[in-house]
Every structure is written in structure tokens, then in C-alpha cells.
Image: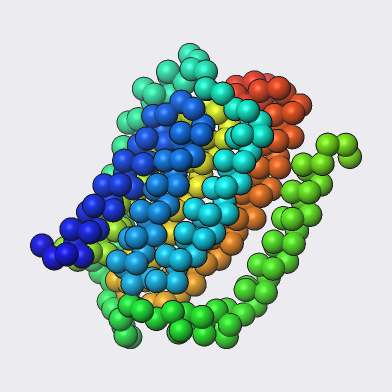
Length: 165
Length: 100
């Protein structure tokens, strides 16, 4: 067992624990905090997988910006504990088997498809320079389109959140 | 088994957990968080497959997924604020205007 694998299993355990905690907790702020734990653990896993730039983006954008937005909304709306109802109890009996089945099928298919994969080209470890190059050459059109998307999202958010239309 | 294969399995499990949360959480904000968890799981599988196949395209895709998730979070939060203001509740069972 290498150091990399041990680190991976540690981070995977943290991510899984956070994800389970997200579902188990009844107060939204506790769920939000455990989601931050999951995202930071995933950033660590990205580092182990050789995606350094993505690890940084994950921490800055996901754990930083998006989760701050979540926590902000929870506090702004003064969200309390969620109420359990008859439907949520029924969802437990149907949802858990379905979720386990979904996970099993996904893992099975993905591991299968990965077994037949043939690696071509160089190792993707530590290729932030190449990644940025690709983003600004072959993928420059989608990259520019995202700026329009963000502009529309800003407008939409402002219009929706405004108190009086 | 190499590291990336374990990452693929982890991403499947995280996606399953996100789907479970989506099904059985009642709070609209927590449901939104479950969606973010599923997006993260998919990102992880993209990175793992990019490592397995030695293709950088997977990582480029993760960038776009993160950007779209950020835009989606901004609009989604605005919608949630509006719904909470109109309905005085965050419970999704009270938000049933489209139900028969």
C-alpha cells in the first residue's frame, strides 16, 4: 500500500462521512457544513489524481463561493429543522433500496467501461499549463459562451431576488 | 487496482448518496445541496477517467461543469428566496401548485 493510496482512502472516508452526514442531519446549516467537508476532501482527491488546477478551482469556487451562497441563504431565510412527514417515511423504504441499486449499477458499469479503456498520450499529471492552453485554443468558444451564461445568471438572480417587480 | 479505479467507485457511491438525499430530504435548500453533491460526484468521475485514459478533455469539462454549477446556484438560490417568501415555508410538500 503506497502513501498515495492511504491518503486517498483517508480522503474518501472523509468525503463519504460528509455525504452521509449531509443526508442524516435535519438542520440545513449542518448539511451545508458537511457538504463543505465533502468538497474539500474531493479537492484533495483531485490533487492525488494529478488535477492540481481543478483542486484549486474546487476550493475557491465550490467550497468558497457556492457554499457561501448556500450558507448565506440559509441564514437569510432563517431556515429551521425540517419536518418529517408520512411521505418522507415512505421515501425511506423505497428510496434506500433504489439508491443502493443505482450506486451498484453505476459502479459496475463505470468500472467495466474503465477496464476496456486504452490509455493514449502522455500522463495527465501536473499538466496545468497544457490544460489552460486547451481552454484558450480548442475550447475557446465554449469558454466565451460561459461568460454570457454567467451574465444571464447574474441578471436572472437580480431580477428574481428583487422584492418588488 | 490503481488509484483512479477507486475514485470511479467513490464517485458512484457519492452520486448514489446525492440521489438518496434528493429523494428523501424535505427541505428545499438541502435538496439543492444534494444536487450539488451529485454534480461533484460526476466531476470526480470526469477527473478519474481523464487520469485513466490520459486525456485532458475530462478536466476541461469539469471546468465547464463548475461554471454552470455556479450560475445554477445563483439562480437557484434566487428562486428559493422567492418561493420561501411567497409560501412562508421551505418544506417542498407545501410547494405543490403544479400537483393535480
